[in-house]
Length: 334
Image 1: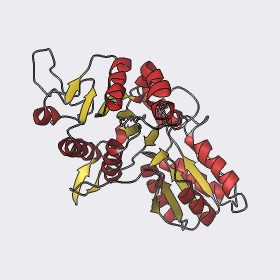
Image 2 (image 1 turned 45 degrees about the vertical axis):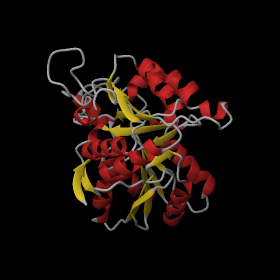
Image 3 (image 1 turned 90 degrees about the vertical axis):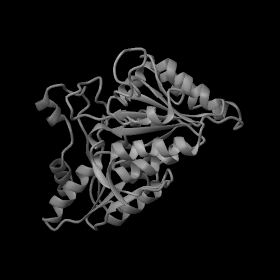
């Protein structure tokens, strides 16, 4: 294995899948740079530099810059997928899905059903999300619960470089549409990643840590904070289980329920808005599937239901922290 960042793991996966399958191409805003203008070709590689280097390998027929028109180029990707190609479309920030939501809700999510299973839409849509970078309310949201709500779409939420590579490989090879969420705060996160190709199946959660006192279910970057909280609590003699669902559609309810039942206490950590979010979904799962096992009320650690502040001080107050998670675990033990 090699030590790689999440950014490198994603880029490596795109290269490997484009080399393996000539039907795979990437499309999005500024993913190559230099189109129709003087200056360096391949100057950007997307706003976070993920696709830098692909243009030189695959050319502009497979690495395609687009106008600022999410409805247009997501529609292009959906049509290409229906016609037999395997597009990887980059929506720069998840917030921009507001522009093209009809393409998601009423097109790519429903074609397999509308055509009686005789058509597939093997499209992967990569997008960034998450607060903590002073990007303000229109570039910082964690909107993944909205997409888990829509039948016909798969939703991946990696928390580390290893999962990012395995889940993205699975997404590109999948016959159904996948939205692949990349937290801005994870691009530079490092971890061990095999050099060879591998697939992590959707709907299989990871048990990151095992302990007897309380179960923590966390999503995306919140898994890192949960691990920090677990270290704080371990110094106090409190041992926690941490479950990382990895995908929220499909959701591995069996592993989550087993972990909750084993501990009898639950804390859910979710960066999304608390109303109709994944924290509420997991809390409901605990209430319906293992009510007799619960020894304390479920605790949710989420931001408040407000727009994400631009002010650094307010944004810091908005986000969950490791100490807030630790405090929630302590509350379940009182």
